[in-house]
Length: 445
Image (cartoon, rainbow, N blue to C red; front, side, top):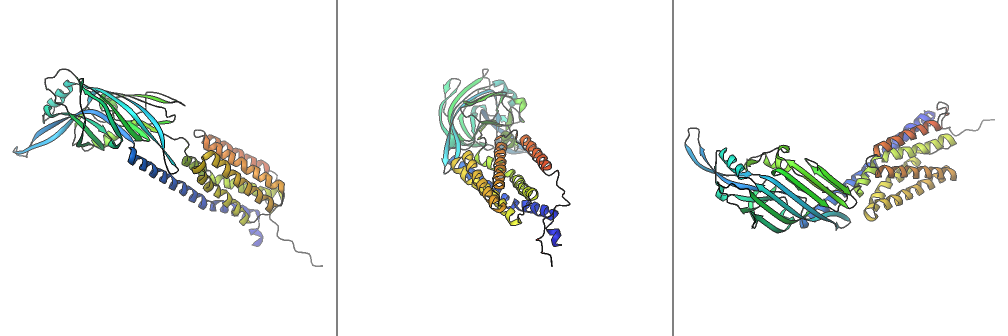
C-alpha cells in the first residue's frame, strides 16, 4: 500500500487534486474583483446623483386632452372620462455634440459628459385630423401641449432656444410622465382647420454619466452624435447606419423609421405596455472604457487554474527527468504563490494602472517561485529554468488579456503547443517502470 502511494499514478493524482484545490483561492480572488467592480458602480452612482445619470431624450411630441363618455352595458351614461392622446411628429432631426471628461471618486474614474443638443421637427395637421376622426373620444385641440421627454432632469443645464413656428416659447415642468420619462411641456393650441405644418426647434444643454440615448418619436428620425471619446459602444435596438471612429473621437448617424419600432404614430397615455416599448426603442452610445482594470483582472483570473496546472506539470517533469523528489506541501506552496499573484495584481492595478501592476506582480511571483525552486531542487539551473518558464507563462497571459478579439484563438494555439511539447519531452519515459523509490534499507550481512 505504501509503495502504491509513492507510485507515479498516486503522484499524478495528488498533483491533480492540489491543482483543483487552488480553485478555492482563485474563486476568492474572482469574488474580490466582483466586489471592487460593485464599489466602482457605487462610485458611478454617486457621480450621477450630483451630475446626472445615463441620459435619454425623446421628443418633442404633441399631447392632446380627450373626453370620452362612459356608458354601462345598458347604454346608460356613467359620466365623462378624461384622457390624453399622444401624436408623434412627422420628422425629427437630432444633433448632439458631447464633451467628455473623467470624474474621480476616490480611486475610481467615471466618464461624464456635457453636450449641446439640437432637436428640429415637424408635426402634420393631417395626422391630427386623421387620428382624431378615428378616435371614439372628443379631442380638445385647444388644450394641446408640446412635450419634451427627458430621462433625468438633474442633467438639464439649460434651454438655449425654443421656437414653435418661429415664435419663442418656454418649457415648464409638468406632473405628467411617459413611462420612466419626465415631461417638460408648453401649451400648443391647435386650430382644427390648420393646413400648414407645425415646425419647432429646440436647443438645450445637457449633462449625463456614461451613456446617452434618443427615442425615435417621429415617422422619420435622423440622429447624429459626435464626441472626442475614442471608444464608443453603440447600443440600443438599432445601430448607426454610418459611423466613423478614430483616436480623435467618433461621429455616428442613425436614420430610423416608424416601421422599425414596435409602436405607431399615436397612442393613448393609459396604454399599459407603452413604458416598456418606449424604453426598448432607445438607441445611442455608451462611453466604453476598453480593457478597464476590472475587466482585465477578470480576464486574467479565467486562466488562473490552467497556468497553475502548467506550473505544477513543469515541476513534475523535473521530478521525472532529473530524478528529484518534491513533497505535496511544496507544490501547495508554489500554487499559493501563484494564486496570490491575482490579489496583488488587483491591488496594484487600482493604484498604478494595469500594465505596471502586471509587470510588478508577475516579477514578484517569478522571483519567489524561481528562488524557491532553486532551494528545494538544489539546482540553480533548474530554478532559473522554472523561473523562465513561469515568466513565459505570464507573458502569454498578458498577450491573452490584451487580445480581446483573438484571445480564444491564441489561447487554443498555446494550449495545443504546450500539450505537444509535454508529449515530446516525455516520449521516452517508461511510466510503468517509473516510481518514486522508497528509502533503501541496508542489506543485513
